[in-house]
Amino acid sequence: MIVLLVAIFHLQCRNPSEIIILDIYSNNDSEMASSQGVSLASKFQGAIVGAVFGDCLGAKFEYFWGPMPNKPVVKYYETLINEVRSQKDGEKGFVFYTDDTCMTFDLGESLVKCKEFVPRDVARNFGETYFAAPSQRYYGANVGFIFRSTKVNDYRNPFNPAKEQFNGSGSYGNGSAMRVSPVPLFHHKDKVKIAELASHQSKLTHTNPKGINGAILQALAIEKAMTTEGIRDSVAFARELMTDLENVTTTKEELDVYDEKMKIVIKLIEQKTEVKAEDVINGGIKTDVTAHEAVPAAIFCFLYTLNEKNIPELSKFNGLVRAVIYAAAISLDSDTVASMAGAIAGAYYGIEMIPPEWIEACEGSDRALKLADGLYKLHKNNKEAV
Ligand code: F2R
Ligand code: MG
Ligand code: MG
Image (tube, rainbow, N blue to C red; front, top):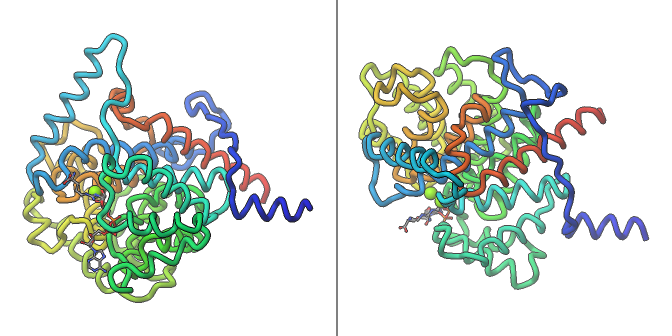
């Protein structure tokens, strides 16, 4: 009987679980991730809240404007910061998030609740969130078909519909990379497991090798940012990341396209003059809705903005804010590239670098903090159990 109940729980995983909120500022117990004095708990929070921050900021510009200068994004960002400052009883969460954040919560909250990847539970979360507001969150053009198909038999065969997308070739949209930030936190310090889970969760919606490898590369970038102390050599970081992908992915097709894009990332980092949106596009990274364009773009934005001198117009902001503003500006798929750059930058700099005004302004900040703390608690418990 007990065995049966456990089996049903794992299959369904519908019981609410408790997530204890950690106070990172007073938690003496928190594990330090680097000599820079940023705790691991702060980096976990930075990764998830950074992803939400990028989505909320970038959503204003997604596809409407095309790639553009930094100025309109800076203006929008500062207007919102001032709006929060001028409020007495601040209205919270008035800048809305999109599908990127919906699916990050759907995946991450299932991992925390189930303590493992339960595909049916994640698929159910995806479906329920989508059907609650299919149009307001600006989902990708094709995922609605998957959710409608999986819902028909109560999410029992969650992997089948994705395989049929695009005449059986599967989607290479960036949708399974944009939501992947909980994965490197769930399997922190284990690149093989990170790659396995990034791939597995991708296959619920994106089965094309380019889509799968995009999700793995984004997950590895977050992990590497979280575990690297003071990045001094961005080119080495980019090269090592590509080697990591080649070593740990079991999807060996379509790696060439990532190799080619990461070489362009390196070329752009080494460019002597300031890299503008048109340099990125003309250089060969389209920054669009596909995984192989958007993920390398996000990695580039993080690495290029490490040096405050690279973009004088953004030098008054800290590194995390620079990465997110720059990503929203140079990208066609602004919300998604900014969200992915925000996740990588948040994992590197920690939550302290996300301005409190923005945490107030952005819808979903509290939920993002709670998710990050849930993942951190799992990490601590797993470590203690070893
Ligand atoms: N949907 C959007 N933005 C639309 C613009 C909204 C704007 N605010 C407005 O109102 O105009 N954003 C969200 O979608 C992206 C994630 O998409 P996802 O989930 O990957 O979708 P999909 O449909 O699977 O793939 C996206 C496109 O990629 C091309 N594609 C993918 N696989 C293909 C294949 N095998 N062959 C040919 N083409 C393929 C298609 O054009 C797909 O439509 C994020 O930006 C998120 O923010
Ligand atoms: Mg979106
Ligand atoms: Mg987008």
